[in-house]
Image 1 (tube, rainbow, N blue to C red):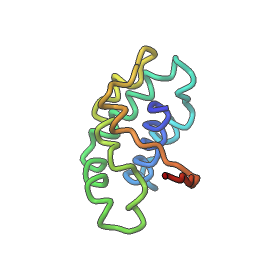
Image 2 (image 1 turned 45 degrees about the vertical axis):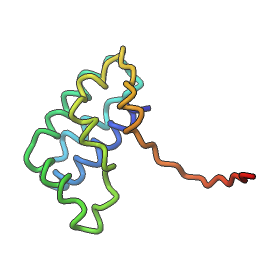
Image 3 (image 1 turned 180 degrees about the vertical axis):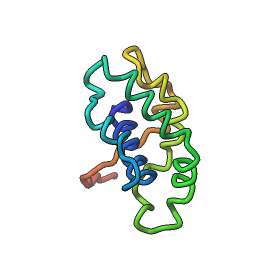
Image 4 (image 1 turned 120 degrees about the vertical axis):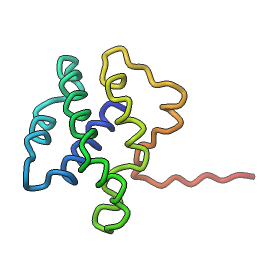
Length: 115
């Protein structure tokens, strides 16, 4: 689940950083799948190459300044992008810190009564 989450957030990062100029990295990501073990190294390489650009760091930090970008990428994405080489492996097992920082969006509401 964390691998898929990183993959989706990396596509969003590509959208922020390279909208019309160069979306080749986004297109490469879209052609790959975290479900395919042979793709994991290439996905990690692309995410790393995007994340380590000044544009990506700037857009990630500045996304709160523009309302249209505010909710684009999760706040904790930098934590996971910084360790993408570990995450995109077949033997990856989330650490306790990974689990605590991971936030998957929820799309439902639950009600619980406490007595």
